[in-house]
Image (cartoon, rainbow, N blue to C red):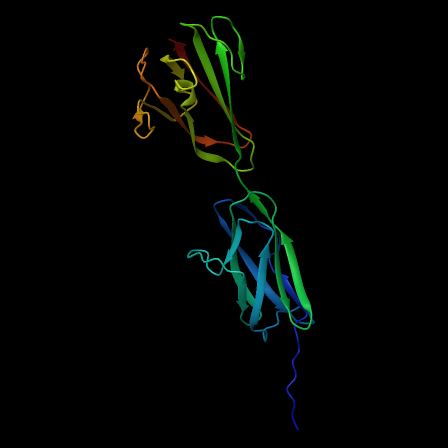
Amino acid sequence: DTQTETVSIRALKFANTVPFTITSISTAPVFLKAEDGSGNTAVLFNDTVQLLTTSAKGSFSVSGTIWANTSVIYLASGSKTVYYRDKTGGNPVITVTRTDSWTWTDTQQETVTKPTVLTSKVQMNLRSGETGVMPMIFWQSDTVEYTVYIRNIGTETAINNIVVDTRSFDTNSNNAVDYISMDTNTVANTWAYTIDPAFTVWIAGEPATGASNVKGLRWRIAVLGINESKAIRFRIRVK
């Protein structure tokens, strides 16, 4: 007489030696294994497990090069390598689980770094010396100096940062102005301006002093390090 028995696994585990740290544009391998009662890989286990993450922007794939989101993974001979990526910075918790007659679960907290870039803008009336971020009164021929601050408070270097200001030239909410100058050659890598009301066509470089048809200014800051700040200044004259 013979009888076939089933010996279940003892545990599901993340086999990564330490939790990983990735950027918001990179991936990390995740090593999965089923363990037997001795803590070894259960090589006779060939079945599926489920993967979960607490991040709404996190996902798994069986390939790190041809990405296809999946949450159900097949373990062959008790193990499998999958890949994880996440577009949200923080510390997501990933979980591997399977439920048969009981539930096996393992969790691991990872780190995803991401830049967080903040901008602010301060205006100064060079005639009166008044400065601040709130609306203020200007007279005809007053020169206004604007300072645009950009700061990276995130956990990853920010690259190819684009700063655009069209509001300063918006005659729907402000008086008409003439462009005077900008001081960006030690801050920005490139700069441009537009005379297009639709902001579609941009011209590389700086407008001519006294130009009255400028609709916006744009700067590119190639690299902004962690906790790094930069300031862009330009001046206009109220007509």
